[in-house]
Image (cartoon, rainbow, N blue to C red; front, side, top):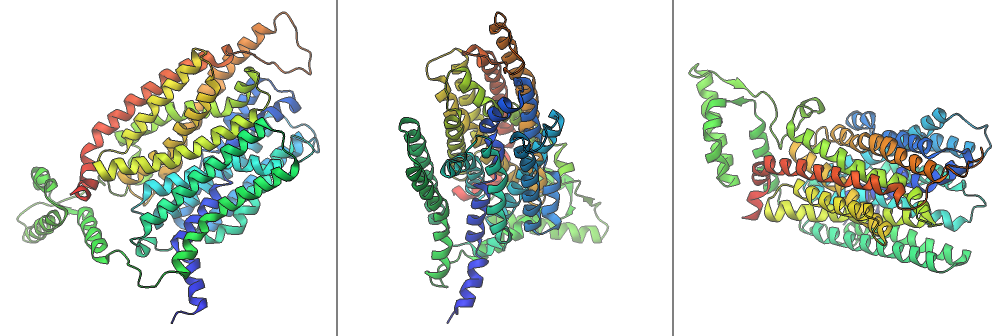
Length: 575
């Protein structure tokens, strides 16, 4: 009979508990998405113009993307160390920003605030890397759902933090920066020792699909609840008691997924059907055969088409037989054996090896154009709302956060269907969302009615979908061994695009139009340069629409180049 201590140990080492704890880390780690709420506060308090706010935004984006140290640490240090470093950076970086904006400290130069925001937001790379690395290692056969849900909660964190902020009824607007500094520190410190690889591939159960469906249900309920709360707050003035009650309901929904590991450990029998180890052993053996360094290149090239057409079991036997003959022939001196020059798509690459691969570079530049466009809208959403006369920009910031969450969850789910049901390249899902992004940006560019709502919903969901699709595709094409480093290199795409699209194009056009509007009414030193009307961002959106179309064509090139790879990886699962 299993004792309580044994059950408790099994619970702590259960991969679903690790996954749920990672979801909690992600639910407060998307601090970069709060910039649309804190930038108007910084702008009014510090007297900055839009270009200076854009510079701060670029510093935030760069901090949110440079995670090479986090990726490298995950390979040599426990994940709790990675998370602790992120907590320290977030607390001190945004803590200094809050003390400056709150005028507790003397007003710091712009470059110092850029450093503070860079350091604070860079902590997010440690949160994301730690959660994702443990997730894909514990669920190697469910990468799409795992990455989608984890990145989804990171996208939703902006709405969660905003809602918690409203519960406390702080006396000044600058307190939202205080919540950004302190909130993640408390939550992540509490759960960081749970986040780690626990040999999840050995814990695979036939009930895993049911557990994922339950999580998807919780995700949809959570998003619907938050959206309903936002609409209610926008239509009705709620008292503090109602706000507190609604926030407590939100926290309960965030904690609800812990029911899954509790049920699996304490309320199911130990003999509940585990997946066959024989299948895992066969698959591992096949991979090891593919990775062997004793390969006769000429024979392999001639027979690759024939071998690829065989079933998995036959292919394994054929390769094993061929290699045995080659080893014997090499020992007898009958043939000259060449060592394998490097890994092939589907095997483990290092970062340096992947940087010379056309598929990786095409994915990266497509991501620069599309996610850079999405991040430009996210960073400028507060000013976009103000230019159109909306006095509650935090409503749209939360809305784009919710749809960002739904886009990541849906991106992981539907891209998984594409590869598992049709054995078609996952990047085709990326190409599809880029077309939708282009259409929504064009809709805003022509000044159509309700454009801010369309952009908030579409750009939020499509930007989020990228961050479920791309990491999953990268892990499939280039392996899991250096996944942390590969993921953090891909995250450079957003700030690389934002640096030009937001820091130069969007802010330059905004300030130009603002100067034209205020030419007959000179501003005093205390006034901020403000632009009003759709003209402030319509040209920018038109340019971004074209860039997203270019991203679509780059993604389709990746789809064409990787069709055979995905057919090999997933084609046997369809039969």
